[in-house]
Image 1 (tube, rainbow, N blue to C red):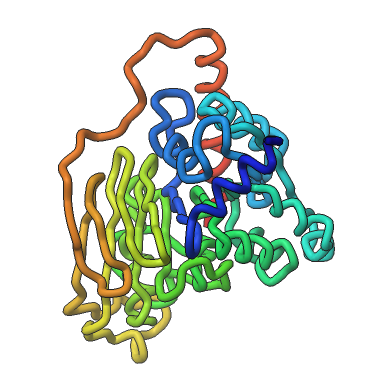
Image 2 (tube, rainbow, N blue to C red; image 1 turned 30 degrees about the vertical axis):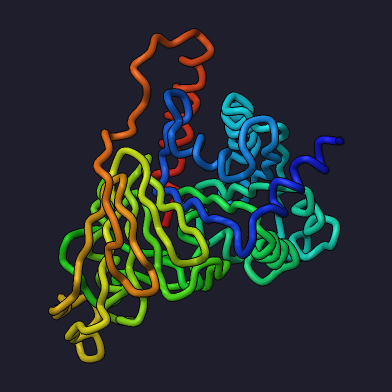
Length: 315
């Protein structure tokens, strides 16, 4: 059997929508790589996963493709390819959309989520990614690639601890997850206030903040499992009292009565019913404590440089 046929059969065995691996950014790429290893597994596993990398959000796209090609290959992917439109016209071409056809996993890299929204959302490529998810393909996204997975995404915003009027802006995302808004690099960049300010304005949205080197693996658009080294912060404003309709621009918001969940690795959460459904205690999943080869060190330095670049790109 040819490699494409093997990969496609692995996807066909899955009924319903494919899993989403929503990563908070700065995932370990040179140690145990637990988060990315899980993505490869969801995409078909060692020797079967055929991963399409979409580095459109990044300002260093060739370097991003090279890095993810290296790590996914190391983790056992059978093939890693990439596609990166530079305009909406290019993203709207049938040829580019067709690049998703043989993929068992599609991975959206970090960078600037506004760029993803402007170049991919609502195009033939964006629709092809949605279609791939619908037929069982695993979709992963880190940092900006995580934010764009929801129907509504944080495009711009300031950081801090006190929610204020107008400190965040929303744009349209890909729509892989409905009814939520996702923020990333959450604890590391103190993004509590901007997430709460969004929920104060739109309390029907479930606010989700994901730490670095941490992921929320979502199946059937509903069941979320937390993996990785950090945690996931969820704020449910379904019964909140808010002053958002009356507070002046920049003023502090009244935000009372929200339900907050902090979920470490091993927690399982129902995104529809907005409740914890299980927890199995796990040790933190950080980089493996193993000697580095020269190649490992080069990868580590490359990853650090890219992370530094993306600190200035992410909205």
